[in-house]
Amino acid sequence: MIASELITFDIPPLKLTDTGNKALDWMEEFKVKDMPVIDGKKYAGIIEESDVLDRNNGDEKIKGYNLNFRKPFVYQHQHIFDAIGKMYEHEVDVLPVLNEQEDYLGLITSDSILTFFAQMTSVTSMGSIITLEMNMIDYSLAEISKIVESDDAKILASFITSHQDSNKIELTLKINKTDISRILRTFERFNYVVLASYNESEYHKDLKDRYDEFMRFLNT
Image 1 (spheres, rainbow, N blue to C red):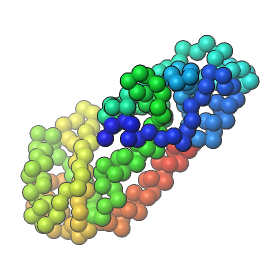
Image 2 (tube, rainbow, N blue to C red):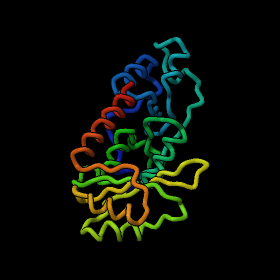
Image 3 (cartoon, helix red, strand yellow):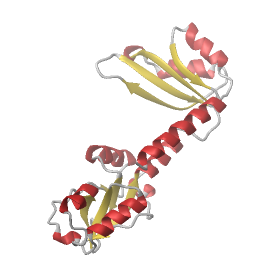
């Protein structure tokens, strides 16, 4: 997936002729702490809530701020992982997308990133979750897949969580089967450490709780 596929047009860009008060109003309305600013079709940069509050003059136009705008962005053809990296690097919750002429096309939001990950990790598919712990040197997805498939199941998605200053990893699997009792017993028989497992109903309740918590965080 490329950046242009995640563009949202729900949040319009500010103009250099807009005031600080308008920037604050839009940040409140759209529940973001950063807003893109354009000059004609060109991307001028990102303005933060603190930039406006520090001026202590909400009626002043943005062009009069003489701010050294930060300019995080991605080109429309870049991979979504590049966009995620930019958002993390610059600690922004919106990321402008530009074309090759560096015209402003729209932006990517943290919500659209969340939706992408939900689709990518098969969150909406029926099934179960298993989290395993192991030494990195012992990790073999081929062997793990063989165990899962021995019970006529399939791995829909997987991701690894590593820990700093540790050789251990956590492997989370999404499996297309709700009854995973035999799979769990097989993992234990092969000396895998099962940290957690969720059947479909438990999983969706936990997912909803975590989603609601995450959305409350975004809206604060």
